[in-house]
Image (cartoon, rainbow, N blue to C red; front, top):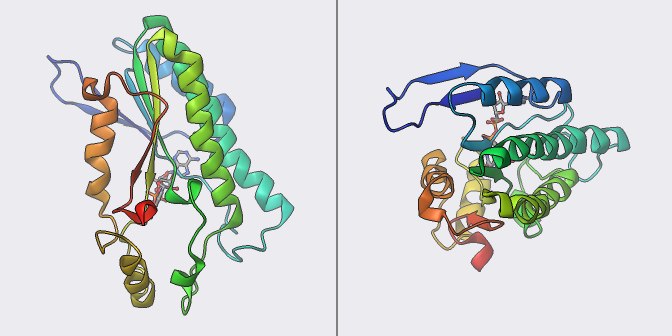
Length: 215
Ligand SMILES: NC(=O)c1ccc[n+]([C@@H]2O[C@H](COP(=O)([O-])OP(=O)(O)OC[C@H]3O[C@@H](n4cnc5c(N)ncnc54)[C@H](O)[C@@H]3O)[C@@H](O)[C@H]2O)c1
């Protein structure tokens, strides 16, 4: 899904929602063209879609080669190629901010002890995908920086979603702030990286993790 928000000063705040499969390269090219040709072009792009295969997470650590390949394609290649297409468009107007959503698991290993006693776990490709996304963010920041395009990435920690009690207790104990993230905890960091408040920031990975990666 792609959500378009008119951010011009005189805008009515209208939101337009367009359903698109961002993992389909042909469709991605169409989305970029379609959205960029509207109004004054794309100023801000947040890659928050999370396409994955049906077997994602079924047997963490024992993923088949097929599953690896498909998820790298869906979650990493698609994100990177879409961002590149958008940054190319933004560069023609010499302005724009792209924000990727990675994870603390793109920065550090999962702490597997917090999943003990639950059926939860972290798929091995997740760490590879998120680590790759963080460094591709730096690549794009370097490549497009001289053309006025900023590219940054958030590394969120776990978000509250009705997880088992054992996991929640172990997870919270492992963070400095002693809690999981709430979805709204991501809003401020996205607004910051989207706005001119971060005009001199590009290529960073900002953890939004309640201090998980600090301790
Ligand atoms: N939830 C967490 O605890 C957590 C923690 C760290 C990082 N993240 C990251 O945040 C991002 C979002 O995660 P989430 O938990 O909100 O996921 P989610 O599954 O709740 O939501 C993802 C969204 O992506 C959309 N989507 C899926 N496939 C798509 C496709 N092919 N094309 C377009 N849209 C598609 C879905 O419709 C959904 O709206 C992911 O990159 C995830 O890795 C999540």
